[in-house]
Amino acid sequence: MTEPRNAVGVRVNGEPARDVVPDRLTLVDYLRDRRGLTGTKIGCEQGVCGACTVLLDGCSVRSCLVLAGQADQADVVTVEGLAAASPAVGELRAAFDRHDALQCGFCTPGFLVAAVELLARERLDEPTVRAALSGNLCRCTGYGGIVAAVLETHERLGPVPLAAPPPAPEPPPPAGRRSLGPPLAVAGVLLALGLLVRRLVARRSRTEGTA
Ligand code: FES
Ligand code: FES
Image (cartoon, rainbow, N blue to C red; front, side, top):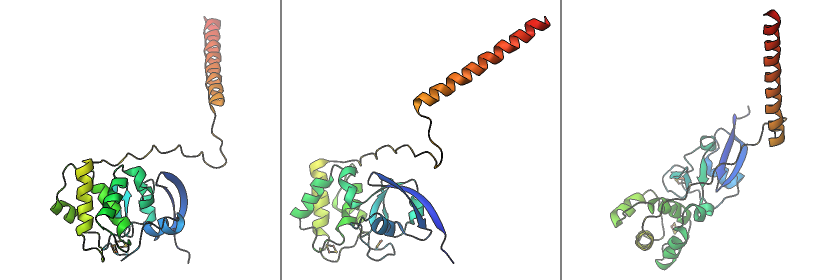
């Protein structure tokens, strides 16, 4: 029996694409296997570790808990596209370096994605950062450096809102039909006007003939 499949149109890091995917394909598998974006990691595959965190329409989500089909028409940002989504990323990465906020680095993409969402807030303090990042697990660092890096970035830059995604491109015309270019569209309007005038003239002649 073949698995049901869905057509999805999802924009990842500003790049639109249409794909046909199995109903049960997760967003993280779609990103890694179909789009080649292996910066998003797979840890627990059950929504616990946060390694697979991406932005979906501007909100951080665990992409192992989202089906690729659910992301249809959405805007997804992975760690590879994060610099275009938030001007805070360069400063945040430098702060991670200064505070030794990574060792093996497996959890780091998920932390960076979750942190840029957090850095859009007006005010941040240590309890807030610890609570907001508590859904991302790190087995190496003890979290102190990560929290310090986020707080230092916020102190230096203030609130940094996420950039709005670029406008969606025009969808291509359906296969087998060509879109009317501007000259053809103008010709169509002129033809319709001509028919209308002819109809009015004919009606007027009939009216005068019967008068
Ligand atoms: S792999 Fe998604 S939360 Fe762990
Ligand atoms: S740096 Fe190794 S899991 Fe976080």
